[in-house]
Image (cartoon, rainbow, N blue to C red):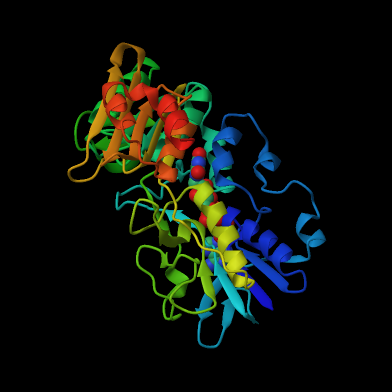
Length: 411
Ligand SMILES: Cc1cc2nc3c(=O)[nH]c(=O)nc-3n(C[C@H](O)[C@H](O)[C@H](O)COP(=O)(O)OP(=O)(O)OC[C@H]3O[C@@H](n4cnc5c(N)ncnc54)[C@H](O)[C@@H]3O)c2cc1C
């Protein structure tokens, strides 16, 4: 069997390793378009914070890892796929035939239509090249504007702060991490950031960035312009699917895959940030997080090698450390029609928990300032265990999730 993998991030690497195990005789070709060895984007914040060096971001540390596993690693870009001819076309010239193809090309940051985003000193925080450019300018005391306070924005916020910059966060939604938190939790997070010296402007848009002297001026639709020597843009991401035009593979938000991670074209699979796969909470979603990429990569590879494996669906789960305040959201944290919520808040202590139920099952949750509940909440949601009389106990005191887990999951 000839296996080809387009993309060498976590989804591609785990798929390549799984293929080697599942089919020791097959040929495995992994193609990645970045100059560095395969690395984890989620390690970039630790690199910026100075906790690790660049090598620490590499997914596999041994120099000959891929060679030893007989995984051919090619630095090139897949520019075209033909499902009918069962071949890919490379940027560097040439074509490669495949029996099974995995699309694991990840996502790219969205560049909003704001004048000035191409100026020097304006960067996304997505690649190692971005991280190097940010590190050059994010020096102690530098004025930095972070455009976007979504999940990735808030992760970057933490590492920028650790570099000692003076930070202004501009978020066009009315609250921080709007897709991860409700008003109450987001207001606590904003207050926490303000207490750490971060200026957070929610409900505010960047309208223009201009060069001024040796720095930049960031114009807003509300309030005074902000001076900056660095602007970091974190305004969402989109799946890398452009090269699939005319390929015969069905694409919506990402490559639509079934519960075996196979696309509409037999023998062509997709995994990670590029895949719109089964969502544990119902329907299909792109869940652009590394655990989903890892699960997708493994399950897609097993199916590619002829070992049927079904995927239960990815659970939307985000855990953030924002200048020391841990927050997490899981599944349908915003609830379902007719469902109940249990809530407890201690605003002064920055502690908050909100559980969402469908009948007597936990389907989602929000937690702020609580670290010991994370695993248990995830377990209760993913096992879909019927809580019975424990639902009422949780309605009275949502902090008792551990007791509920022990009582019901092992009942
Ligand atoms: C700063 C930052 C912090 C993050 N923190 C977290 C976190 O705390 N927790 C978490 O779960 N997730 C986090 N993420 C998200 C996580 O990194 C992604 O979900 C994960 O990288 C997805 O893996 P992937 O293999 O699908 O895609 P990627 O890691 O994007 O890898 C895809 C690779 O394919 C390449 N490629 C694209 N197109 C082509 C082509 N046509 N031909 C060949 N190669 C191509 C890309 O350049 C890339 O190298 C973070 C991301 C960032 C940027």
